[in-house]
Length: 473
Image (tube, rainbow, N blue to C red; front, side, top):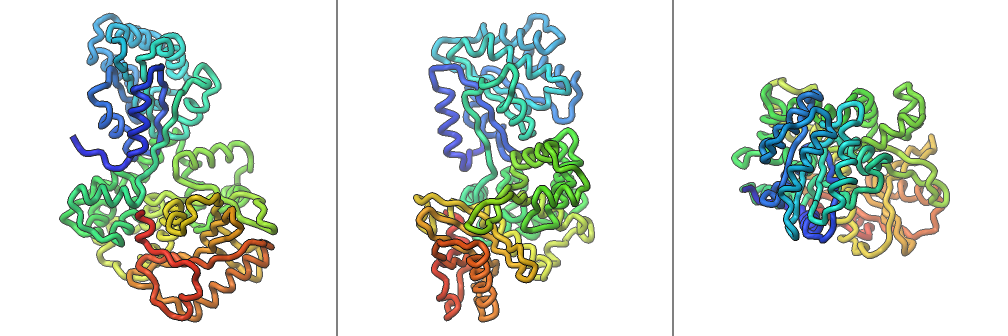
């Protein structure tokens, strides 16, 4: 069996929940391909008393057939009814015969949203199953899992019906960090530099399944071409599959994503509503929350006078989505698009933007490198509302000790040279920020680069200089 890479905290917690002396109802969720099923099977494969998985895009009849087959495969020989209530009664009957005092009875229902076709009968039956049987047995550990993250949050975690307040634990499985990505690649025979690993992350994100498709006898450019730019590439259709698996009707979500992809710093909900030609109402709120729960977008605040939050901005952060939307039109041009465009402005510009997102995805590592991981902080982006000075700062870390790290993020394959022109531009951005926000905090100019900075008088003005290596810690 494959080795579990990373997920140390999740593994400790899951084992703790399974060994507890009370009934447990665990909701595990996270975006498609992030490794939820693998985590459960890797840790608990020899402890599963019953497991079943929903069928992506399956009809109601197919979902019910899958559940019935699972009951038979686990030894149930009695007649099985045709409703979800009757099938859960059959499961209860099966598990009653398998209960052993002091031994965990682990039930794993994977891809749970697939079972609940329109009507909610499955969730109501699941609630009945938990409330009338599972909750009465200390040995029972029920794990439900789903890639349709927004559905899991709305219908299970925040359920207002029979499952209200019933979950004992929730576990959100996020993509790998850079460090976990490095560990995964090394364990699979890759001898890539950290810059190559960062470029891999900027393309695929820390999604384990995407990483599993990489070959260690090919360069990163060859891998990208094989997976994304050849006619039979395994990730050519992934974008459509990803969003179809997340939402019953993906079109409104794709329209939001398309708008955000064209605006690097993000858009307010008012701007989104205007651009989409839709009402700024609860329906849009729900869609934005869904995308947040799926780790596709993030919400952050732009700071105004006296550093007061006045509204939120939504920004697209899913690496693979951004990669696809930037380069999808290049597919099949020659099957070697990436290799033929190495070092060109289009790829260099894209890597520059992607490195900014990479830093935003590793704020805890940046805080540790700045030695402020023990200080309360708030981080955000800032952009001027002045028509005369369209200034933007990609990352500001506001600290409880009344200091602010104003971060400049620069991508370069070699050492970054901070020249007079850019140093002047940076000073203008700091000054504009202080003037327009009215902050009374001190400023720490901070530079984050990939491979360090060529030392000169301009670089010496920076209070802190971080590199890509700091993001791997």
